[in-house]
Length: 450
Ligand code: S3P
Image (cartoon, rainbow, N blue to C red; front, top):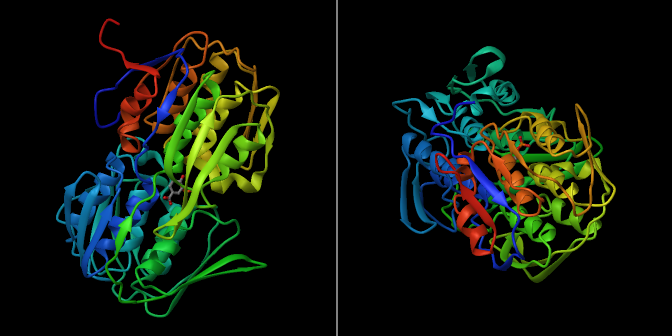
């Protein structure tokens, strides 16, 4: 699959104990939302700890293309002077969201109730992902979308001139669908309601409230009913982005499987709608402690201390899936080192991420001789305890989390593990290689002829 750059093959080798402090970057979900809500607000929003990964930088560029004033002041420090709800200007050119499903889907929501037209595209991965799940509810507001077959990008969205509020039950457990509907609802008069059967990450609701919108969540027999009062006057905010638990997952899991490791990860966001992996790892016997638990900027955070230990396979409850949906690739990598089998059910959303993550992990693990059972919505990994062969080159399909999962495995396998292309890692975790080598991990780019 062709990305935006030349492939970067990488290899990870068995490493000595990992140790030290891992300062992982800002949360990707919160970073996208900070820029988008800043752009929908008149006045200056200040953001610190913004993730400067390619996905988020592409959202920043998009916000500038819609007329917001977006400026980088320093390392992770940004300011956005926005246009107000409904104030987006028509972009002069195609909006390229690169690899970012969250970016494109949330931005489509934000512009769908503005009287402008925009065309969106992305890399080969993003162009193969379903967009009908977003354009269907946005059309209920009065927007019109024309994309390729099955609604895929490139896609042109004509925003609604006279938007009407919507009541929509999400057919998938997806925070991107929920957020697109809520962002569109901002510029519709009256109340927009989104119902989700399973609770997904709630950063949009928290941040919308922080910016002054009226958002209520009520749990009913139908599910979680989230209502937003349209056309609020948003007030600029100062946002401290917590560190990304989904990025922390990689050094955490690497420390668990590399014998003798002990790693400290300060300031990790532990929003309960995101922290499912840590619960799962602890059930598997992981030695993880949470220190200095506190709240920062409306999100719970703590410092995580992780020590290597033996793990046992478990059955991960299906209803935990939304709170750890991005962490199944690294969990399935860790499961190979556990005793017994790890059963992951209710995970069919993994099939429509940056790639089909069930398939990508299953193929790579099988190539190492690990027994896998797989179905449309489940993955079972039969653990081999400490001795995992390695010695493969995994295909990453432009998927950052697949690349990082296999590289973390390679730190503990008997033979090295390579990936065909680690270029996508820069979308979410641009400092992955330096952070991991600072802990003692042996991860290298392959130079020609090596
Ligand atoms: C995200 C939601 C999830 C997740 C993605 C980020 C978000 O996607 O996989 O990495 O920031 O809203 P879905 O909403 O499609 O589950």
